Length: 306
Image 1 (cartoon, rainbow, N blue to C red):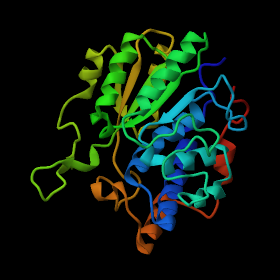
Image 2 (image 1 turned 180 degrees about the vertical axis):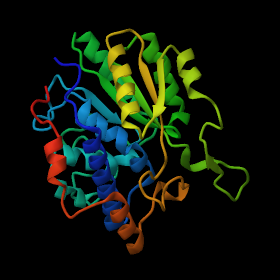
Image 3 (image 1 turned 90 degrees about the vertical axis):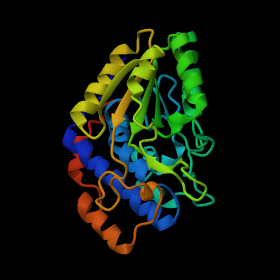
């Protein structure tokens, strides 16, 4: 089994990420529900995972030898759906059904409705424990799929995360990879008084997460989560350690609302609906045509996902 799926150009990945961001913001605006800031900050990571890293078969979503992926920060589901649609799990047109009552694309990922999801998520802090179980199960079965879990930096405040961090290192699960989307903003902060929602900046108040994970026995790599060279190097670091005995955490420095000038670095865009003027700006800033360019399709090597 090859170490990774294929090699997609950085230009193609950027174009895919722009289309993914457009699908996210336009769909949330149309549905009048959903999250924007987190899906946009994680989009470059998601696109690189699904198009250039994960061993997957969209036409065979239950392929036993696939890598597993869990979106622990389940409120960013629209970002995951956009990337899965672009990757071919289901028609792009279906994204427009997001969060409707009879849709497979619920506001949080529901694996009972949508093939291709490895876990239902939404209650923050649980995804890493689920991934730990999958990684341990794969090792006990003598199989080599890797388990990837994408968390938010605000989510990492949940105590259950640290129970999983401790346990994964204790069981020496080198095939478990956590990716933390460190966009530095969250919807709510620690209250400073009785009538406010607290300071939403820097959920960890300046604490360096790298040394903390290292002290628990994890391999640690910090990088720019919007730079495709850096993302590729980070994923290679994780891949190279997957046969070892230490789990890996990738700390991605990102910007909340990435790609939209009116949303970047603003906590109010954790959720939100764009105005018609903002939506027009988003289309222009992301360089969106009415359809996905043939150049993107041609740039994707779909010659084998095994």
